[in-house]
Image (cartoon, rainbow, N blue to C red; front, side, top):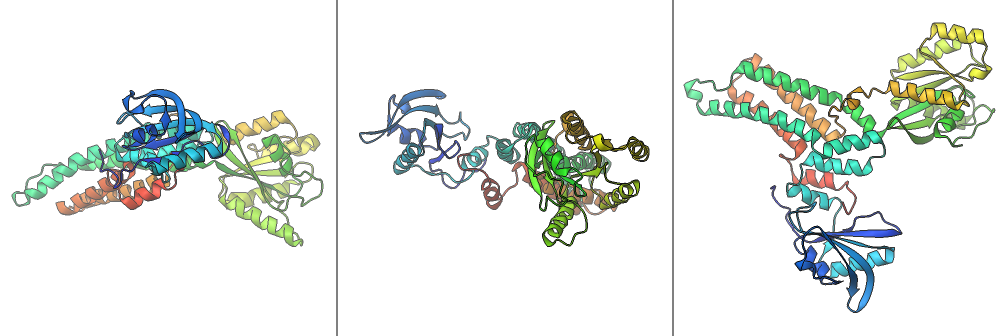
Length: 459
């Protein structure tokens, strides 16, 4: 069990979303959670009931009945926080919820801080820090991929990887420290060859985790996908077709879209943030020029660009020129030839010959739009995720892994340069420190405060 939080007050918060609903769930956690609730509950004596039981009754402020409720009882350590926990299911009226919470605060509870329930679970050893952070990711997951990744991490998938690395390194660290104690006797408890092999193996695993962060970021935050092209190429029509709603104004007048329009859909379990942009052309219209400038800015930060060519109004020379510009931009892009229904067959054949990876469609054809979705998924590399490999999604974990890599690299360099044991030991200790930061073996109050402050109140 980790060191307990400085104060062990009984905390209270609404665990369900704010606003009117069928029910609201009020959560208390702490040594006095049961006795505080029992003081206002008219029903069975909660202090004499077994854990994991539910009891019907009323919450009363003196003789005044506030509501009929169900009380869920969890006795320490058999609860999420490993403390006594009460969950009050009441009617979802904002007034009722407010009255009950205020009553329980008067009886001795205090309002919980953001993430304080999960923080207490961590402090009592319910799970490690990486798993605690995954709780927030699971709550915020809005796609199948994000849900599966967060669930895997919450259940210890990522933590297990880190713990294995750390345990293997701790053994050699102890041997090196032992050598320092016998420094004058020139003995070797840790084979430098074995240590080098271990560190190289650890670096291989850590490098794979580091490289998975790009994929993890896509899974967690979605894929920013810019729809670009010249005016009237069909960008807004395509966005509407992808979203299956009239999100963007469609017009034959060039320059209709002067700013970007953004919305999100799920394709194959992955969230894609599609951004319809102003048509790319030179213009004297000040407002349209600002839209074009914003288009260029969005294209630079996109993970994928869907670039539309108007088959009814473009030439081979223009197509090749625009593709050359896209290739120099360094952002993955999909060549999409639109308005297939209006194109000259000879022109299509020429384009297919020069650009076999170009996709031809009419944005008004639902079946062809579905084919586009398949192609988009192919361009987002999800092989690692589909194989069930551990994926890093948290920037804090990513940074700690980079620091671990640097320290382990220093261990190899130290062995190669035959540095003294105390320097090798120092680099190993640094590696263990950074790995420990991920799971919470090494932590500070400031770090914990920063992590849990980003949680919602009531979790």
